[in-house]
Length: 216
Image (tube, rainbow, N blue to C red; front, side, top):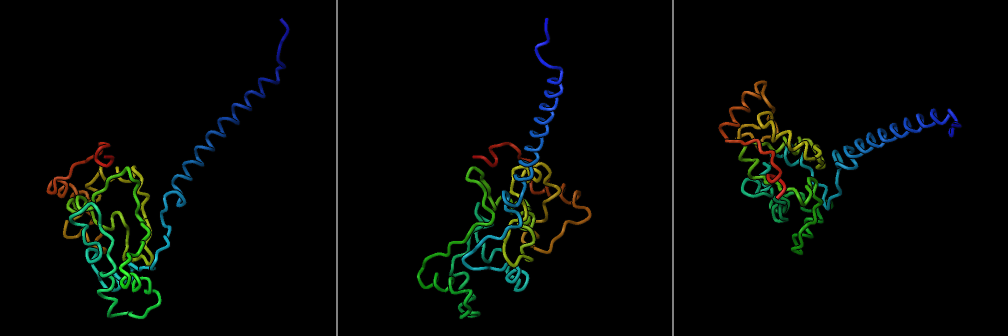
């Protein structure tokens, strides 16, 4: 029987298969890089705000505790956004004419809340409760980073499910004493695993990795 295809077709097919495999691998690599890029995760990206509030100045410079502004963090799923009168409790006395604070003064005069842009904005299908994590010894800086060093607030962790699960699977690596939860200067000690295992038992921490823990 006469040969239907020229022998060179075999070579051409091998080349095409090779190109297809390389293309699929390249697309997979590009997707991975894009998914974990700052463009997608918003890590280390500053958000435009109505007032350029500096956590570094207020926390590090003035020593204001997280709970002064985020009043519901210990009792609610939400940490809370401070109302304008919280800002004005100080700024009715200091920096009273500062141009940068005019949006705050206008909000106070009109009663119209400032429209802050959320920095840590989880998807609607994710449930997160601040009070539970605080009670279990998860520190503010564990998730939010060193806010006391941030002139402008930014996200330092991806907030992806894999990042959350790393802590849920190995809580002993991340928990701290409850009295240190709001400390921005606390660092894990050399015996963190030993301390963590003791706190996991003392605080009755469960390694919750079932879907319904966060997706309700």
